Length: 144
Length: 154
Image 1 (cartoon, each protein chain N blue to C red):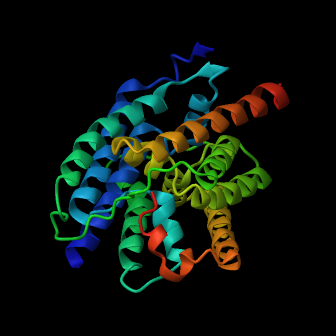
Image 2 (cartoon, chains in turn red, orange):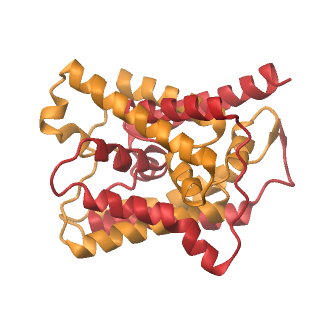
Image 3 (tube, chains in turn blue, cyan):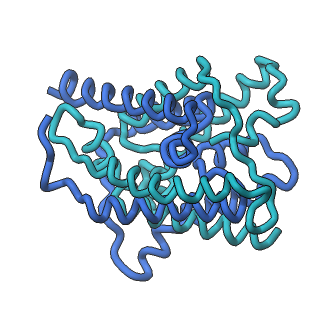
């Protein structure tokens, strides 16, 4: 392991993280809910009355964030190296697994760890571990 | 009712802007973090650190309240058991995350930025979530009938 000092952006990472934390804070303090993206999106596939519009409002805000950003500045780069087949496989896997695992990076990683939830700690360690392992296999074993 | 919708929208917007500021809407940067055994970019750890520092305070404050500031019930997960579903789901999620560098939030932000691959990823992700619903209904675990267990999803 060596640290990629040219890619490492501690300050913008910290600032962005604080904004994400503020978003989660607003949501729990005003709406009484966990800002977990997979749960909010997945819940739309099980529509119940009174439980749809807030999900749509949240997701609309998330999706419109780049547009709001464009009012002030150019968008930061978004580079997706993976080819289309891999993108589809990964999307399917992320969709089904986050529902089985009751959460993703936001629900378990940010909100769950903030709540000191043992389930979320276990989940976060698990997806970090397989995330590291997958990139190791893809880049260093298969990628050469 | 309307106030909770506005706060939901603002939460989503702020979350998305946080992802853009932090660089986490960019899969290349996320993979830089997950490449622990290569040229490692620790940025994602700082994102989590910043978010959790704020979150710790917020959830502590929320936990002391009977209801939210807008009068909504607090819907926080109560389970503390670590079961097979949680672990297998999370392990599988990590694999999908590592394959492309997208988790659900950044994928939706990148979709909003007009990235074609993000559109595809989100479409596949929604199909995956739909598969979960189908399998749950077939399994007849009873969870669907009440929906109660999933109101508190993360």
